[in-house]
Image 1: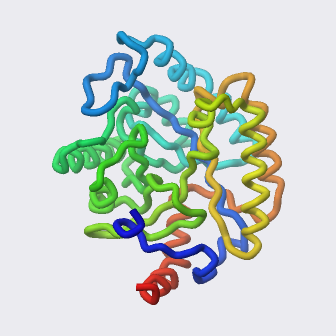
Image 2: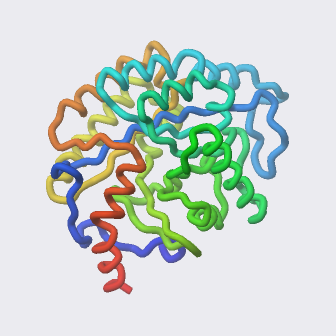
Image 3: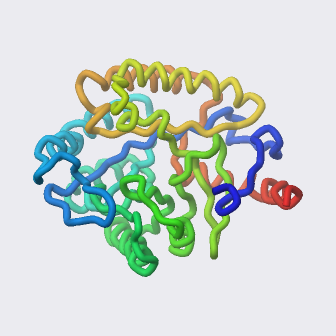
Length: 299
């Protein structure tokens, strides 16, 4: 993959740059506000609901809890710590639940496009169909908000070898589809330009829950991760992502652990709490030119 999308460069060999105010860490918090279809149509590779036969009332109801209850509990915690989130959004959620859209828009949240439904996937999608799908995402968001989408994160963590090229072609600024670094990096695309903003699967509640990781343990992992990158960030600036799902960490028995972890992080100096678009824009304006020159020397 490094030969196709990016050039290898060890983090300690790169030109240094500074986050705003000399911060050690750019922190972005990413609640995945999703919509799962009750009876999804057939897809090429994977059954969206592994429990058969459909409908999977258990799986659907759990995720619907996130929209009806969990997201509001999570918003209260974000407000408490003055965190402006980047919403990993299935666009159908805002279309079907305008109350959630209004709450996020009122808070100035950024939007990371996570496709239309989290039960539809890009795997093995023909190029023309994938291009049209991405264009539809752009058009739907513009109809909802009047703005251009800035960030892309493929629905269900599905993608094709062409996804990054098509995302750049459609005018996106950054992608969260790769988890290969602690800093933003430029990507090799057929046309236009695109950078990564590091997302995470290691501090991702929905992923960790599959391995029996509960709220208290996730909070410990978040804080352990933070201590490491905060220490390292004194010399080399880092990005830290916390990926959340309202139907997971928005549960009553887990929310206090998220509250505690965010409170300790936000009380520390040297943390620039930003949105994905803010991180991408700062990196492009202040660090990308020297990093590209560095990559030219490697080549």
